[in-house]
Image (cartoon, rainbow, N blue to C red):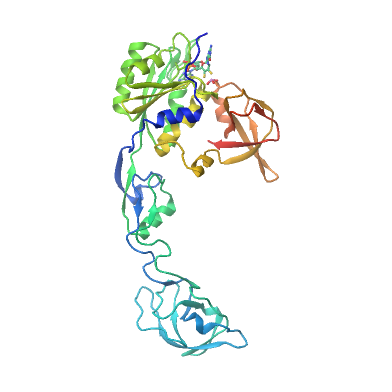
Length: 413
Ligand SMILES: Nc1nc2c(c(=O)[nH]1)N[C@H]1C(S)=C(S)[C@@H](COP(=O)(O)OP(=O)(O)OC[C@H]3O[C@@H](n4cnc5c(N)ncnc54)[C@H](O)[C@@H]3O)O[C@H]1N2
Ligand code: MOO
């Protein structure tokens, strides 16, 4: 039997591709309201302090904290009301010892004051004097200038995916446009003489093309721009032509099918002959998805995904999704930990070959404060196994399986 060559671990396969990725993917400037979900192509720094002044967080009285020390209900600290802060305006004058300014939530602290006493902890003797019945420490019930973010600080780092709260931060520092990565264009080619389009009725021996649409959805779900190149028969010249067109139009190309070792599996030969450095690996020590191949042609990643639909989607998840979503593979400890964020109890014994990582399709349940991962049985040729599953449980290469009751890490779909 022909052997797959150069079988790598997932990490090695990622490193092989990563070594050739561009430093910077295409990027563009967009108004902030169009940036939700996009990745920053450049860091954003604050140019001013936010807030730009010491600001009260409560309705009450701006005071010198020291004047309130020792105040109790039985023995209040008495201070004179010598001013009133109007919200949105710069205060006049100064709070001196024994004095207080009336201040609303959000008002600017007057000079001299270093804390705010909440109105609830004061008693008004007359319109000019209050008794404070609880002491405050300096800085209490207020935020200081630059507490939210100080001038020169990084507000959002490069590569960050913009969320709702980030739009708020950008507003606070006066940023109305940001530089974001352009959605990566990904071409999809399904290979196989047995495939027909979803709208057609398959004859005996034929099947409808599942992977084109499943991969289209997977790319779009990662923020990419998918483009279908249809079904191409297992023919060297035809595959070569479509690869040339798809490479020209896109930042990345996915082939599905024809990645294994059968006599008609010409995809790897076509890809390897199409440019330098060509195929970087053919075979990953995983299940499902072992026959996957990865290449770089003219600086662009090209992947040959296995034809079995669940295998194609698992390899997509491991090798392609991080590129489309974040332009590269997880590197920081937090990013890596977040790839398989959920810990769940596996409900069955599963066997796995030593030296191979398994990604088991699982359905999640929840009871008694714990998640349970129920393996979805069925071969990787069955798309229904992916539909029934909520995610992939990881069995690391060092283990020869897991026993029911063990904790597994799960990547959610
Ligand atoms: N003797 C061996 N045979 C196989 C091996 C092996 O190691 N030795 N590996 C198996 C594994 S694992 C997988 S996965 C598949 C990978 O096959 P290919 O990537 O070469 O893909 P095909 O042979 O073209 O197709 C496999 C299977 O999937 C169906 N298919 C293909 N494309 C689509 C599509 N777009 N939509 C729906 N179904 C598709 C195809 O009809 C085949 O049934 O190889 C194993 N064989
Ligand atoms: O590993 Mo294949 O990729 O089982 O179906």
